[in-house]
Length: 510
Image (cartoon, rainbow, N blue to C red; front, side, top):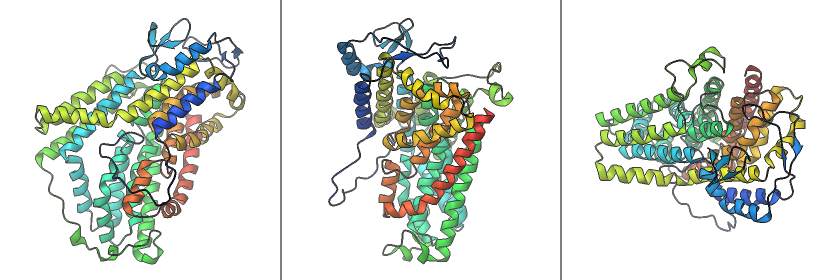
């Protein structure tokens, strides 16, 4: 997943000579952010908005308050921030959050368990070998039609990216895609662009990606299906543009190898189609697993989409009788059951299935903890009552601004945050509790704010050196990071313009 622990870790690389700095992990960044926010809470005055019947802040009602917190209380909040981020409960009267209070769950326990459940499911699927072989068969079948091969692989990766955040898993495909591309007369940059940009643009336009759209929607208190029409249109357009960009470069390199941005390593020009051995045929078991995976994700989409609102355009439309309206708790149960079902179909046996499920949950503990830490930051801000003060500091900028400009602003303001926190789930949990009320002030739907946020995160992750998919990918492809930047920057500019246009349209439409 983008920003989540993949099912297969990237191969370890020897650090370059003279390297003295490694960018810290998302967990470390969030630990630093936690300390910084805790310290800033001593300097930022507490304040509050009046709330409407649904608990949303009322514009223009901000006023200063006394948080009533002693230094010991603040130390206790810092100490308990990870615990509160998991299962902190918000008191209905005071608004304070703590693990031993009575009220509604404020922590991210539901999302935490969902991440572990989907990690178990994806790990079981990969253990069957069905997904690897399926993509391998597609690549081999299209080996004589280079442009179609590139488009096909990118489309599959983009579809997986938009549905379930397929990103780190692509690191396992370089050994397959690079020989195929070289055999067809392309260079290593074509293979790199096919993999990184194919999956990346899908994550950028996440429709129901639980690690981006799901976590952000939960933090913004909207349904995962809200805004899905805009995101689907974005996915179609931006995926088509990205595929066209890579195919154009590929055709240019094939016609004139000297124009390659990556160059060729010894032996690269000696590849032929015969060296790209045909992968084994899909077995009946593999086909059954792939169908089951498609059904599970299809059912997930069906279960979370507010069909009445999506089909009528009225967000307040009465739900149809067939709508399920599932939340993260339901989805966690769905993927746990699906993991067991895939294991049973694959005849894993009790011991192997149990071990695979546990290993999958363990592999995804890092993104799950990132969500908890990020939620813990919001608890500190909530208990010190500075969240509304932060909102008020930006309210003047938002007030009176056209809704289209606000949506673009959400995209731009999240770019530096996405650089520092490449984990989409952690970034969402940290940013959306602030951005969602601002969207209310600007008269923009929270779903549009979610889409603008995830576009910023996805755009940054196409090139940022803090992203394991990018750095690991160029290392596996044996091309320079600087050369990759030269290749991708025109596309980044095109995508940024298109995203801003979509955000403006989405704000006026929604």
